[in-house]
Image 1 (tube, helix red, strand yellow):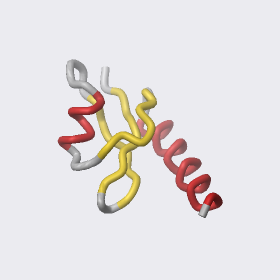
Image 2 (cartoon, rainbow, N blue to C red):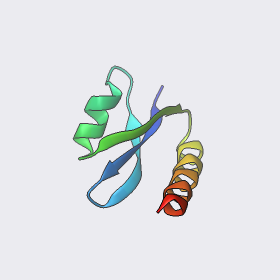
Image 3 (cartoon, helix red, strand yellow):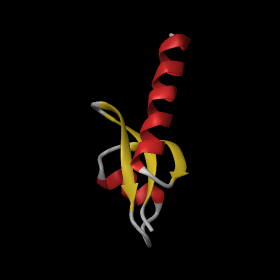
Image 4 (cartoon, rainbow, N blue to C red):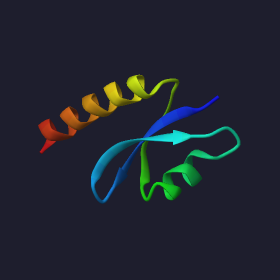
Length: 62
């Protein structure tokens, strides 16, 4: 079952797929980023909602 995580790349935050048998770290590296929130999230939508909340939290901390 595919799960999702939040990573940060040079372009900002994004949702990354983690395929079965692949570690979260490897999936993030393949996408060109580092893990910000490993989840795991069961759907893209759930991960995206978490990404929006995280981005808002980061904006208020600045």
